[in-house]
Length: 190
Ligand SMILES: C[S@@+](CC[C@H](N)C(=O)[O-])C[C@H]1O[C@@H](n2cnc3c(N)ncnc32)[C@H](O)[C@@H]1O
Image (tube, rainbow, N blue to C red; front, top):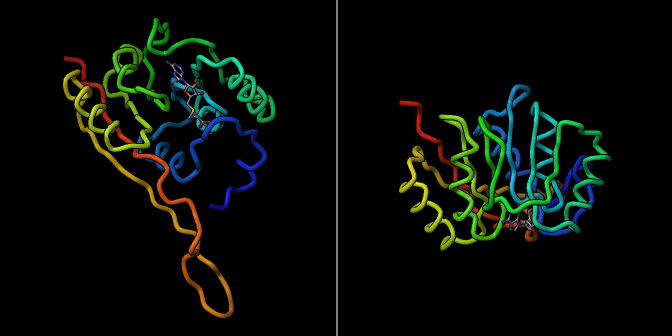
């Protein structure tokens, strides 16, 4: 899949979230200049950096110092002083509260849902980025046992189109599956 230059310039370590999925997360949750987002794990920081480009504040957690170094470089390159990177396990204690969005792109993301719930404000969104259906099943089951609602699951398919004199058509190569996106809202204040 073609990666546009505003992403191509970013450094890449572990598997990153691609613009097709990042764009959908932003549009669906409606985050913007007043939003506070919490992200786990940081990885190369592609999602965290993208959120920080448009949101008021982003805090991103990762247990791997080596990956955080890559994300630090991307943060510096983009000049983002509203992005805070934390070398901490997101399933352990978390201080943040009243977030508009929590994004989870980490193994066993369902184990992070308790902290996601604590961190979110009522009606805030949690988004799980999950490569396999088995993970989706576990995640959705945990969501519904915890008082999250409006759960929706998507897969975003983007196709590169070959633009040529001899015939325009979708490319035979490309990125097909990346991950499933699971969205849910924290229940409203009673
Ligand atoms: C696929 S990468 C995330 C990529 C990132 N979303 C991006 O767009 O660049 C998954 C990350 O989750 C981190 N991770 C794993 N368990 C974690 C935990 N309990 N708390 C925080 N981060 C964790 C890993 O170290 C890894 O960097």
